Amino acid sequence: MFVYEKRLQYPVKIKNTNPKLASLIISQYGGPDGELGASLRYLSQRFSMPYPELKGLLTDIGTEELGHLEMIGTIVHQLTRNLTDEQIKTAGFDAYFVDRTAGVYPTAASGFPYSAASMACKGDLIADLTEDLAADGAMA
Amino acid sequence: MENTNVHPHACGVMEGSMPGTCANLAFPYIPMQNKNAQRYDAADALAAGTLFPGLNLPFFKAVKSRMNTDNTPLCELMALGFAINELGLYLDTHPDDSEALTLYTKYVQLFQEGRSRYESMYGPLQQTAVTEAGYTWLNDPWPWEYDGGKK
Image (cartoon, rainbow over all chains, first blue to last red; front, side, top):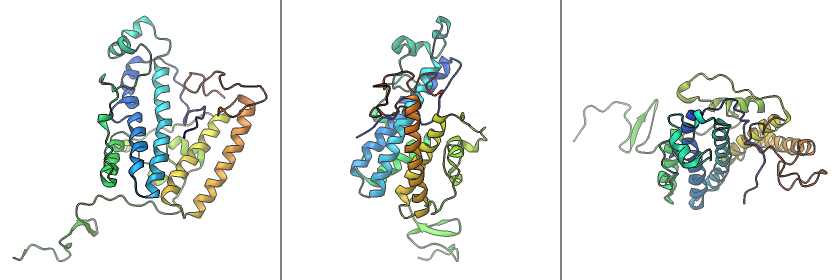
């Protein structure tokens, strides 16, 4: 069960629109090492964890990652606020815009949509924790 | 068959060398954080991104400028909330640290009081918090909006 709290974990207030930056930061939303992957990784792996410390940690970290996902989505949303016609044509953002306009879509910066193929959930404690190190160590 | 290159303090057949010690081969390890780990206060923790000075390890040791937050009621709640998140994760692996548990209990109580106070002034943080103004859950701003964190 999850309960939503109507606040961010850390404040986000971005004054200047910057679609080019948004087109890169979106990878932390739905890319291979992004926050969506982190949430799903931890919240899925916990079902086969044998120890209470690990059931707790994966539940609590996976939940916090959802809060990170919301912050990254907020950053992308605010970076693409009040776009001008010229800004829409910004190299790097133009391809995103033609598919998603200013919607915050879970995708890698490369354009590859979020894929669970970028995470593992093997039902084996050592395999899963090692995968967590690789994924969260790549982009904490 | 004898290996004449064996160091006098060589590790056992199933072991490999670590700085100053031996350990089982092929096992990765992560040192356990000590009990009573040194802590920042809540505002410093939110600015640093961790409650623990020992875990304040910027990417590639880049020296970052401090990410201070505004001194608003919401930012104070965020700082308390972050300290609670961090202490909660610490307690998951250190459930017997009574000093950390005492602080956790204190922060949770402060947070709950602070949240009620905030909600009575600025509107609900949880859908179930119905205030005297009626059902104001839908009122702008939402957290992702540019002025979402102004109070």
